[in-house]
Length: 308
Image 1 (tube, rainbow, N blue to C red):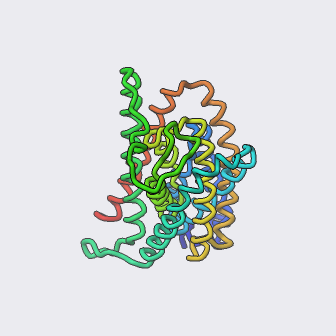
Image 2 (cartoon, rainbow, N blue to C red; image 1 turned 90 degrees about the vertical axis):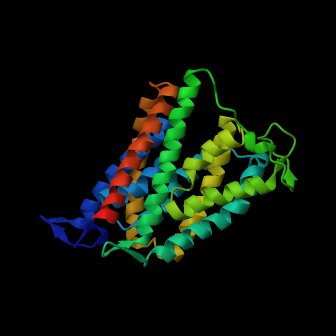
Image 3 (cartoon, rainbow, N blue to C red; image 1 turned 60 degrees about the vertical axis):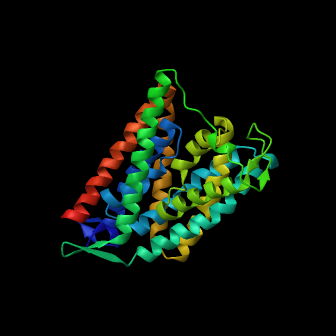
């Protein structure tokens, strides 16, 4: 019986469920280390690590990833004083966020019991969709990070905020933007994309959220962080509820969530200390290569599914 069953079976006298929890603690340590080191949520590591390394089913791993984000997001929000003005932009983006989370989680649930026949073998469609999306996302953002560092070294920084020039009514005013008005439609579509990633991948869309606010909308970094915290909390809360509804989160998976939270809390402290010793450009460069390294592991896993 595999570890993904999380049942009280012994392996050399050690209960498998206890062994699994200890391994999840190590995964959480790595996730927290990345979060503290690079200043961005390490949640993108949760699903690949739980599925590829610990062989936990994809749908369950996604549900755990969505639920786990709630812990640090809530702690970060409580540590900050968010004004009403700062809530205007996140709540506007939440207009598309809600629909995106529901679409992503529903798509995952639909693919959960489906399979595709390739060379006389049955390949789970949920694995193909989730891992394939991860692969595209990580490769794209990883290459972008390396390119952005290369441009910065040549003193040719990227132009930010080009999406804000799109004049699609209706419009609203937000303190985060320098111009007098911003398209609510564009913000809602951005929220839809972030929510789709949260529902489908369980990472709350954090990988595209903060870079999107900074590079697409031109929001200054410190304002983007405050805005993203609210959006992440909304997305994670809704994704958790939807995944509970679909049965991707249950009493057993809550043990995994708790182990991830403990491990990530310890890892974040270590990562923060190391981060202070490295420059911003070095961190962005290392982050790009980290994303590409995880993408390679996912590509190998997809190759095993399709060709073996």
